Length: 231
Ligand SMILES: NC(=O)c1ccc[n+]([C@@H]2O[C@H](COP(=O)([O-])OP(=O)(O)OC[C@H]3O[C@@H](n4cnc5c(N)ncnc54)[C@H](OP(=O)(O)O)[C@@H]3O)[C@@H](O)[C@H]2O)c1
Image 1 (tube, rainbow, N blue to C red):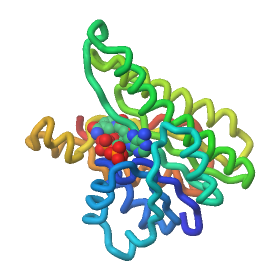
Image 2 (image 1 turned 90 degrees about the vertical axis):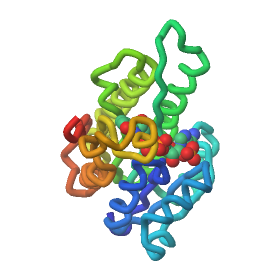
Image 3 (image 1 turned 45 degrees about the vertical axis):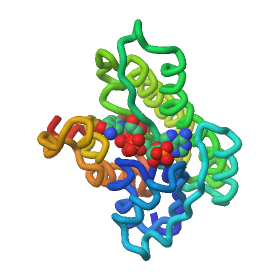
Image 4 (image 1 turned 120 degrees about the vertical axis):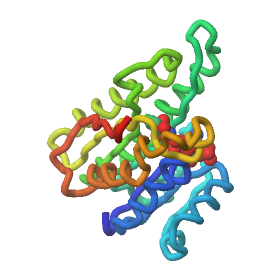
């Protein structure tokens, strides 16, 4: 990714703690939108000061179209989009509120649409692009209590595959990784650390993402890659 402009969303989140150092090691110019300054400080703790200084941080809500357009315009161009933003919520369908349903679609699917839309505009203009989105195992194996999350992630898979078809015949690709449970601080807090060795490591997902985001992966289009570790 040397010399490439990389938009890395969710780079300060739990998965980002492993993906961001992996992406930085590839030598790109990395921009990370964030909402919580506390998470930026947490990321600072896991990367070298020199690498940290290479990141352009932009405070923004990726649910707002104007904010996404502004990020891409400040970057000048986007060569690589790695969209990690997303999140999880559980509940029985008959008890699940409509606002929680909408929130899941906004967080997982609509942020993906907006970042893909504005990154793609730039990629189409420049004739080069790599898009890597993040789904979840639940997007292909919908679980009970997970209707909203599973539906939103199935939508992210469909969106990514549609973009891959739309960009056939160009040097722009789109692919998606499907993690199962990831070894993140939030999961350790919620489920205990006893089973954490079975969960897939953020760095490991980072390696898969970085390959899909590389020039070498030019012939991989519309792949939905399971990254389940030993789960
Ligand atoms: N954790 C798992 O076990 C697991 C399993 C399968 C798939 N995944 C997927 O992996 C991805 C990363 O998950 P994670 O565990 O790293 O979640 P996380 O720790 O909650 O991180 C999510 C990141 O997205 C950012 N974000 C959320 N909404 C945003 C918005 N509107 N605008 C800008 N930034 C926003 C958050 O920033 P703020 O905190 O500042 O809002 C945070 O940096 C998600 O797509 C998730 O669905 C996770």
